Length: 138
Length: 215
Image 1 (cartoon, each protein chain N blue to C red):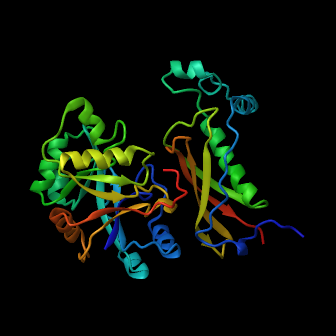
Image 2 (tube, rainbow over the protein chains, first blue to last red):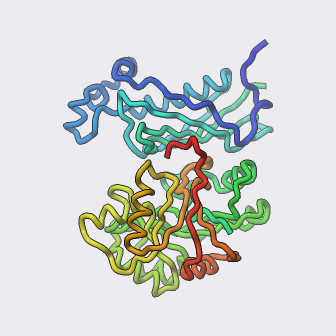
Image 3 (tube, rainbow over the protein chains, first blue to last red):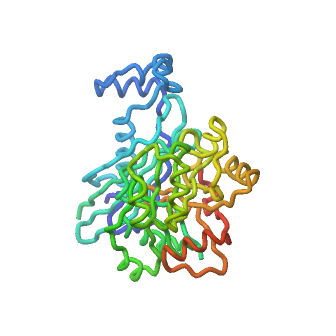
């Protein structure tokens, strides 16, 4: 019997467990290599500073992937029907970032929920906000 | 009354909150808000009608604007046709003098928001360009502030004799109500009432951030 979260377990207002994903340089380099997304601003602090950033920044597609992984960790077996992110500020490689999520709507007929998603930078700035629509199996 | 004076919905380019979901969240979380004001970026949303949501959720939902000026972002309450004719709300470098004076002329109320924020806040511009005449009220508590920003806003506002209010600056549902404004002994049922209450000045900023909140 599966312990996976089901639609019936979920209420509007539920909050996902806070996650501090690994955005170390080693991990970001691994991601960039796998995604063929190896721009210097993501994998070289000095190069990023030369572009005006405080240091190397976490790629936006990695941030979105990390948010998706948070959702699946919370509700294994669910299907992310859509995920929509807004990048409001840079997230630095080798910093501690904080991901949060919350259930903001539920649709019983479709077995879907809407989630708020947020990634905060180490200094508390909002780096990414977004929403996701998630569907649960019967 | 307790109102969140600074929120964004999906009508803003970077907003991802549906207005009804704000209402559901407020009621589900039992937030002490009596209502909120939608302050969409660089526009006034004249067409949306939220009266059915006001009735269903017993919340006041008002509409205002957040415009961008040469001294940072400014909230404008009581937007009307005269003000929309006088200012191009889509201009990202509106002269703040014009925003303040035209708002007053048209019976609206303009107040800079997140003044302690770099680049988009009034006080960071004061450091470089000097003080603007005509500012009397600023948002001293903003739900999107990082540690230190609101403290600086509060201190500078006090030094300059400005009144202060609060707003969440929410762009997603779960951020509404982090900061708000209390109007003791006021009954506000319309945007005109809000402009009157802000003009009278009997209000105070309130923080409703949970203790674990980072910013």
